[in-house]
Amino acid sequence: MKIVILDAYEANPGDLSWDWMKELVDEVVIYEASEQCEVVERAKDADILITNKKLLTKEVLSQLPKLKYISTLATGYNMIDTAYARERGILASNIPAYSTDGVSQLVFALLLEMTNNVALHNATVKEGEWTKSKHFCYWKTPLTELAGKTMGIVGFGKIGSAVAQIANGFKMKVIAYSPNTRSYDGYGSVDFVSLDEVITQSDVISLHCPLTAQTEGLVDMAFLKKMKKSAYLINTSRGPVINEEDLRIALEEGVIAGAGVDVLSVEPAKADNPLLKAEKCIITPHLAWASFESRSRLMETLKCNVKGYLEGKPVNVVN
Image (cartoon, rainbow, N blue to C red; front, side, top):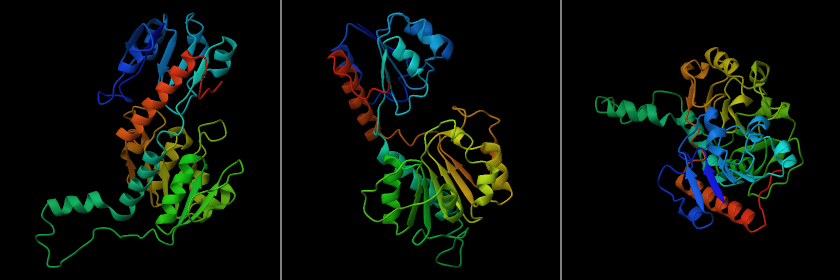
């Protein structure tokens, strides 16, 4: 039995261990990264294939005759043609709910940076502005309290629910849109409303929807123009949910107050991505999921996935 990992680095850059795999199968081959054109050659003899972002299309899978099982290194599994895999008798599993705390934490890191400008003020102090000031304090931008503001959440799964709990802790009013009926077991309260109400009533909109045909390009100029001019947009879901050129124009023209994104339409970012030069837009490099704690949970779930398959009791199956 042979396991091949196509893109191991992000999940484990060296602070975790893959040794447990060697106790389960005869051979383990680990690639820190793979180009898409290398996938077939590297995976052709794999019984079990583990990947984060490599595309496993019908064309790719049809060239992997030994493959019996796939596990992602992420919650998303849209990179796998799950229907064709099922036809071939190939099971596929994902890693659900491992990064909920980390992602929801970054939502507020982005939001607090926009409302308090911590990095800006730190820089001015280090540059000597405070030592030269006649006043015991100063601020370079308006400062905004979150208490009493409305947090709008688009998509209300585990992460959306965790964001709601934190927002309640900040004494924010929380409204949410979900295409499916949801319950809320956190402290505080959430009002479930229409998407249009979330857009028009929120002081902050946080996106937590999956990438589907319905959500791709959801945040376009029409969406942005419905938002309050004082509102902030945060995206820690999937980059293509936002029309990035429309967001750039909206920020430039003051349609909304600011944006914080952890994901872009193409990753790594292309040099010509319109948001890279957008003022009032904070961009982090898809790191919300990457805390040591989150990646440790990911590794434990991956171990359960692989052991479950080998023992004939597969878990977290998505096809």
